[in-house]
Length: 107
Length: 123
Image (cartoon, rainbow over all chains, first blue to last red; front, side, top):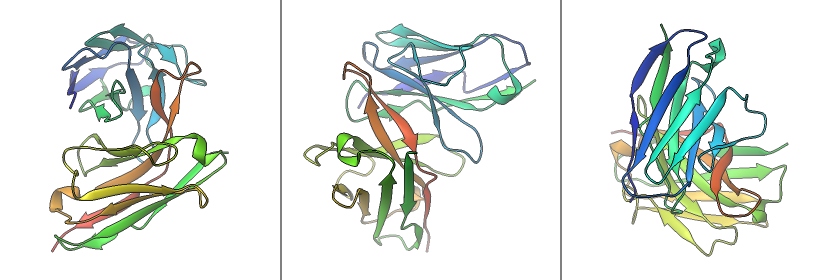
């Protein structure tokens, strides 16, 4: 199976900061990479698909980049509602795999 | 409105079996592949299994292969997960999720998720 590794595992930041989370695949996955946000008590929310396409309704401060094995999720200006855990997920194969998650906390 | 409602979770002893169900509404069920994703207490998301729109293709994570079976009934708009030989490490919140694709049909993603059902494996 394709392994996905996120870094960092946790991150402290302040409202207004620019934040970048990285995700690395164990083999090339082209642009078959999705990003999700999960807040406690809620279901995961799709943010980005195909590495850089913004899901409908997601604020434009979220952006995704990369291809091959290295990917990024960037939040341009953190808002209070953005403090959550973020997961990458590959869809290169229909045996999906998630990264271990990055917990974004308030500094 | 898309809705996915899971049921069937509970407390079960190691080695036991459980069948989860997911009732879908608000969309054409047999147009979409479906998946199960779980989250153990204090852990991250783990993809468990997926099934194509007609049930013709199924996939499993290595951690559940040979023990879990995914299936669907398009007439009933329902997804199932038969879980056998359960282990303590299967304890988790289990979500069903719809697998959608982009307009060109190349890229898959999980765009709607149910609230989940809790499975606890304990003696």
